[in-house]
Structures are given as structure tokens and as C-alpha cells.
Length: 431
Image (tube, rainbow, N blue to C red; front, side, top):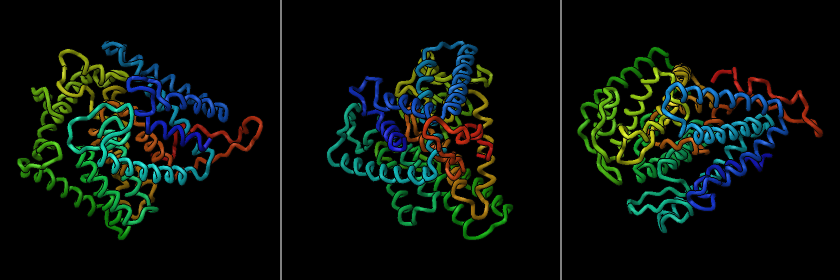
């Protein structure tokens, strides 16, 4: 089962290219994942049955939201299929964590070798160009790379998740951390992945610095609060003062205001740009249109795929890519205010631990992921639901360091004592 799990995960990472032809929905991951679900069901029928009931409730909830919204069901079915495949990966990950005591080490070893393989592909692509099958032809000649991912933003999310591991976990040395951060920043800049780069530079690295300071000396929470408040105030004034400063990316030049000030003002006032093209304009306008429709639902939500459905309406036509390009907004608009409440609690939990003296590495990893996600989510397109490495990484971060090991000891049938408690699927041990 261990080998098969990592085979399924690898198939998910290469989901874009591991298919017979570009438009064929049958991919290697979509073939192997149901077999993984069957294997988990045979090994742990009680846990699997309970989990399938949960997914059934989730599907019914989304059908109810789509019905109340009245916008149609065209995106509901395909979206639920995507979430089913994410659910299968979650269930397989739980089974691995519960069954194998060394799963954390095995997973991180897989990530290490995957990262080496990914970098080798990216370096080769820089010299000879894209060579994987089933990728659209990119004739922009801007020097960007994507390896076996559909686009550069899909790659950006993966690179940042790996950077979280390297920054938060003690097993990685200072030189390794520095190398990974520099390589990640270089690739994000080269690919013009602005949101992911900002997430790395403005959130992930500062959080890492706070962790290092807190590990060296105990500092009063009040002092940390004063320092954090000062940094926020100075940062806001700096944004206004530097709003006209130009930043040259590989594909275009933007001012600080274009990147960080104007989009926020437009979204808060719900005023679209009125321009049909441009990456920032499209993403800002998409967010505005989705928020407008989400407010019409009184915060209840549009149902799975509802954010995609909004951007197919004629009054919300975009000249560029027609996808939410905002993972946090996508989940909020689709599933409603419970997402905001849940994430608000996570942020509260993370901020209370951010300045804690010598925070344990599982909590460090979770704090970094929670605080980095909103900005990073601006980089990934609405198809984040098919970025299986990202969700596999999130599942691992949630389970890392938890005591869930209950091996299956019976050779014929399943030892009931080996069954995970309900806490495995709905952990009560904090975040």
C-alpha cells in the first residue's frame, strides 16, 4: 500500500501530462485513485464508510447551495468530481498516516526526491524548451518554464509549498534553506508569478525570521505586538509612498500601486477596471464579479463550481483567462461563510502561536501555511482543485506530528482495535 500511495501521488502531480491526449479527461491519476479508495475500504471499512457518508453530505450541501442560488448546475457536477478525487487522496493519506509510524519521514523523503527531479526538468527546459506531452504550446518566448505542469502558476504553488517545508522543519540545514529560497524566488520571478513571489517574500520568509528570533530568546508578547503593529503601519505608509515605484518582471513592468494598492481599492469599492486584457486587471475584475454574485447569495454560497459559473455569464465576460485566480475567494464564494469563519479561526490560532517561544516544528509548519495561503492562492488559477501536490501537501501539514499510528495487525480481516477513532477524520487536537 505504501508504494501504491506514492505512485498515486506521483500520478496526481503529473496529472496534466499523464493522459493519452491533451483533451482526454481520463488520466493516470483518475484511473489509479479509485483503486486506492478500494484498497483503503478493504483495509478500513468503518473509517471509509464514515468518510463516504461525509462526502455524501458535502455533495448534498453543495446541491442545496446551487439550487438556492438558482444560477444553474453546469459547473456543479464537474466540480464535485474534482472534489471526489481530492477526497480520495485525503482518505489514502489518512490511511497511510494511521498505518505507518514512519509516514512523515517517508513523505518528506518523497518530496525531496521529487524536488530534485523537478529542478532537473526545469533546468533542461531552460536549454531545450518544453518537451512534455499534452501541454499547450507556449510561443511567448519569455523564458518562463513550467516542467510538467499546465502553466507557470501551477508550478509556483508547488514551489512555495516545498519552501514552507524547508523553512519550517529542523531537518533542513541553513544552506539548504538558503538555496531553496533563492531558487524559488528566481523561478517565480522568471515566470512572472507575482502573487506567489509576494507570498514568499512578504509572508513566508518574515514568518521564518520570527521563528528564528523566538527560538533564540524569549520575547514579551506585548513587545511582539508593538513591533508587529509598527511594521504594519510603516508598511501601509510605505505602500502609499512607493506606489509609483516601478518593478520590472520578465514579461512586463508594474508599479507597486499596480500590484498592491489599486487592486485592493477596486475590490473594496467593487469597481472593475473596465479593461479587457491584462493579468492583474483580469484577476481583479474576476474577484469583483464573484463577490457581487456571492453577496446576492447573502453569504450562503453558490455551490461547488459557482465561482466558475459566474465568469461564464455574459455580463461578466473577461478578455483574458476566465477563472477565479483566487483560491480563498473561490472556496468562500462556493461554500459560503463557513469558509470565512473557519479560516478566521485558523488565522487567530496561527497569530497566537506566531510569537511563541521555541514553537514546535509541526505548529511552525501549520502557522506558515495558514498565513501564507491567501497571497499564494492569488497565484493559482481556479483549477487549484486539480493541483494534487498542493492538496497532498496541505493534508500532510494538517497531520504532521500528530499521533495517529494504529497498525492493522490482523492478517485475515481487520482488527477492530486498529480502527482509527472519529478524531482521525475530525481531529479534536487543535489545528
